[in-house]
Amino acid sequence: MAFESLADKLQNVFKNLRGKGRLTEADVKAALKEVKMALLEADVSFKVVKQFIRSVQERAVGEDVLGSLTPGQMVIKIVNEELVKLMGSETTEIKLRPGSEITVIMMAGLQGAGKTTTTAKIAGKLKAKGKKPLLAACDIYRPAAIKQLEINGEKQGVPVFSMGDKIKPVNIAKAAIEHAAKNGMNVVILDTAGRLHIDEDMMNELIAIKEAVTVDQTILVVDAMTGQDAVNVAGMFQEKIGIDGVILTKLDGDTRGGAALSIRSVTGRPILYVGMGEKLSDLEQFYPERMASRILGMGDILSLIEKAEAEVDQEKARELSQKIRKAEFDYNDFLDQMHQIKKMGGMASIISMMPGMGQLGNIDMDENEKSMSRIEAIILSMTPAERANPSLINLSRKHRIAKGSGVDISEVNRLVKQFEQMKKMMKQLPGMMGGKRKGGLGGLGGLMGGKFKLPF
Image 1: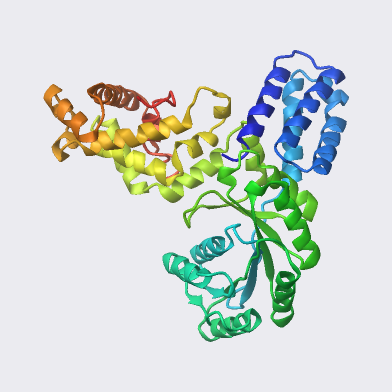
Image 2: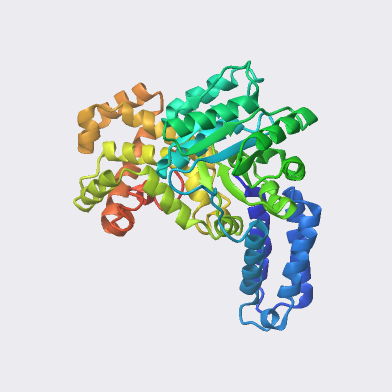
C-alpha cells in the first residue's frame, strides 16, 4: 500500500515523542532528523525534504510547542499541517465549462503509466456527475491503443470517437470536437500517444493539438512507482507544454509514495486523482488532508465511509442490521459481507484507512486475504440449506464440507466456532451494524471480529 514504509517509520518517531513529558529543542531536532531520513527513503525530492524540515523545525521549536502540556502531540499536529500544505492544502477538481459548452481535456503521459485506462476512468467519473463525455482515440502509434480505449469506453458506457491509425492526431481531435457538438456531448477527452521516454516528436504533437483546438485542461498521467522519475517527467511536461493537473497511477503498489509528496512542490500543479487498482472504478479523488492523516497513522475514516457508501448495497446493509438484531445472521450474509469487503478494495485497503491500524505490526494482510479465500471456499461447499441454517452443520457434514473445499476439518471447525462467536458479539453490538450514514459498513466490523485476524 502507498506510504506503508514511510508511515511505519514516522509513527515510530512520533511514538517516542509522545512518550516524553517535556521536549527540548534537541529532542525535536533529533526526531526531525529521523523524519528527514524517512522522507528521503520514501523517494521524496531532496529539495522538498529540506524545505519541509526547515518549515516544521521553525514552528516546532517555538515556545508554544516546547512549553505545551502535550508537546509531542503539538509536533505531530505541525507535521500533519505541513504535509497537507506540501501536497496542496485544497482538493482540486477538474475545471469544466458550464452547461452544454464543450470542455476539452487532453490526457498526456509516458507509455506504461496507464494513461488510456485512466482516460476511461475519468470519463466514468464525469458521466456519474451528469456530464456527457466523448473519448477521442488520438493514439495512432501504439498497437491496440484504439481497441483498448473502445473496450474501456464500452465498459463505462461512454462513446469512443475513432478515425483509425492513418489520420493525424490533430485532425482526429478537431473532428472529435465537431462530432461532440453535433451530438450533444459536453466533454471531449483526448487520449494522446505516449512514448517510452520524453522526446521532441511527442511534445511537438501535443503542442500542435493545443494550437489547433482549445484545450481547457491538460492532465498528465504518471506512474507513482517510478518515484522521482515521475516527478522529473511532470516537471518536463509542465515546462514544455504546460499542465493543469496530475493523476498518479499505481499508488496502491508503491510503498514509498515519494512522488505524491513531491509533485505539487516541483510543478506547482495539483494532484487531481490517484489510481488505486486495475478496475475502472479504482480512481480516487486526491484529498491532501486525508492522505496526510493516513501517512501519520490517523486513518481516513471519511474515505472509508465514502467507499462503503459507493460500494455497499445500502438496502442489504439495512436488512443485515435487522437480521443481526434478531440473531438471524447466516452464512449467506457472511458471504455477502466478504464480497462487500472485496468490492471496497480488500481487507488491506480498509485497514489502511482505520485510525491507529498502521501501528498494529502483527497484522499479516496477505495471510488474511488468503484466509478470506479459504473461508469463501468452505462456505460455498455448504448446501443452500446449511448456509441458511448453520445449526444443521454436524460432524459428518463438516467432513463433507472440508473435503469439498479442499481444507482440513480443523479449518471448518475454526470457522464454525468463530462464526458463532461473531453472531453473539454482533448481537451485543448493534451499533457496529449501521443505521448511521445510510447503513454504514454493514457487518464489516463483525466479520473482522475486532481482532483483525481471520481464523486460519
